Length: 355
Image 1 (cartoon, rainbow, N blue to C red):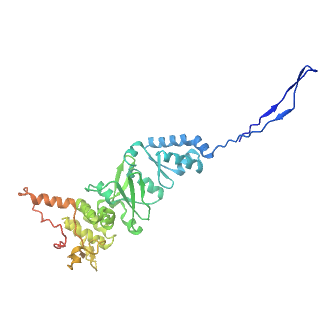
Image 2 (image 1 turned 90 degrees about the vertical axis):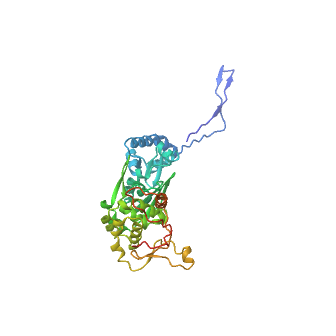
Image 3 (image 1 turned 180 degrees about the horizontal axis):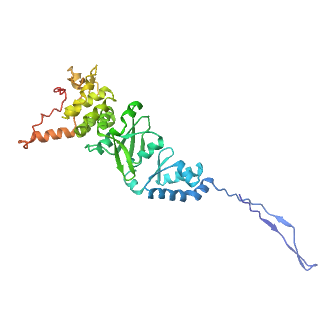
């Protein structure tokens, strides 16, 4: 705070003395001037450039994220000072905060791509949260070469309930798996590594992708979306590894996967799951989210897959499967060495493929 005071003085000339005589001071109105400096800007002026430089240094080291506690210690900042500068940089789209205490350093190319690729920072984020994880479902299926999979939705299996994250057009969806089952299968034999320019991230192996697609089919674009993944990747699954992992999942998941593997001709993989199907005691619907279809409404009984103890309560349609059948069936002469495929069965009520 500063104060300015103005005083008026009146001088008089004394003719007898021959010089000027200082008059009594005449006080004018006192004017107070107040100046307030906001602590917010005081902090910003002193450290915004420092934090910005720190972020540039981290990017130069190939690290596109920072931890709040590490930054405060490195720069000697208070909580208030860090919060003020971080808020300004977030507004300038230099930083993003997907979870409390964890910040992403946004590059110009990230903004052009609709946000930073989660594969680049999911591993350090999960380390920050102190939680194991695996990338699975649509993104993992795309990683392993499945067609028609949307890479914009990044799905992660975790043993705890977590809220989804959205940064620009990038979205992370956390899918919960019971901790005991998660701990059993989330091991190196069933995991792979997704490599990025920032490092590595854990990704489900093909066997877990197949099981997760059936178990969490709602997050895999429905049963038809799961079927597409099984059609594309089923032949590459290791039967022994698949059977060992399937024993950890619900028996109904193993049976549904076994049926779909058999339906698409992945015989070895389907055979490895038959021992689990023999343990089943009750009939389950192929799609548990659908209770009635048109044919049932007319009084018809849904066909059953006896081997897998499943009621075929839905029609199964996927683009790749029927496109292939249509292409081959339209050819008058089959190429030498290629067997004639079975006739297209677009309606799963036509017969029972349980074999």
